[in-house]
Length: 254
Image (cartoon, rainbow, N blue to C red):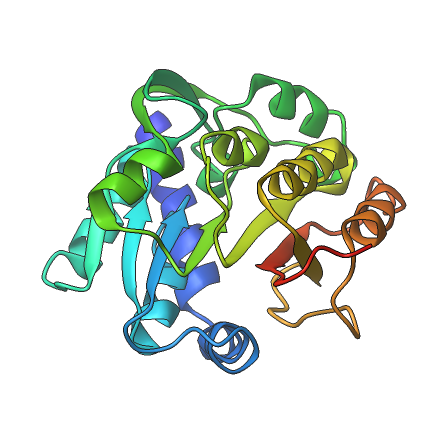
């Protein structure tokens, strides 16, 4: 039964991320035309899962370090990108410090697998996640953004999508980077607000956001730290998840 659930879960994931041609177009438009990621750029995909964002970044000419701890998605990543010299696959999670941790795996919905027990507790109380279970555990290696930079160089863009563990990932970063994104879930919006706070400890940033998988910036302009934090805090608990985009400013906002 467990193997069947795992196979079905991965099949569903592949259909969602690779079965819709418009998804790739949206990813390329946002990353390329809007955010300016292009040939020669270096991107870190933290929580690469089955590599759909890797695909978009590679189509734009960027080199990608794909970081993914979960066994089943890792096998997909290796199958798709093993022969691509522009993709480096790192079989690990990312956090505040190097070591090992327990990954809580949802076999039926592998995109919801997480290192965060508190996130599971929060998400489990929300109607959007009704019926989701975290069935098994995998002991995984954990690296940090600082350690990844020591090995692969400083990235031009970091995408973080790790189901409630985003703030811990940023806690493992000690220098400001030009462009990042991190996922938010309204039911645990404190995680996203902590991410904003951490980035502001490193340098001055401005922010925008995209809802769901639209890959379209929802803000008409880039927002101050206070504005994005207030916007996030006001989101309804049952509202859609999304991604916050942060780009480094040359001057700190007053």
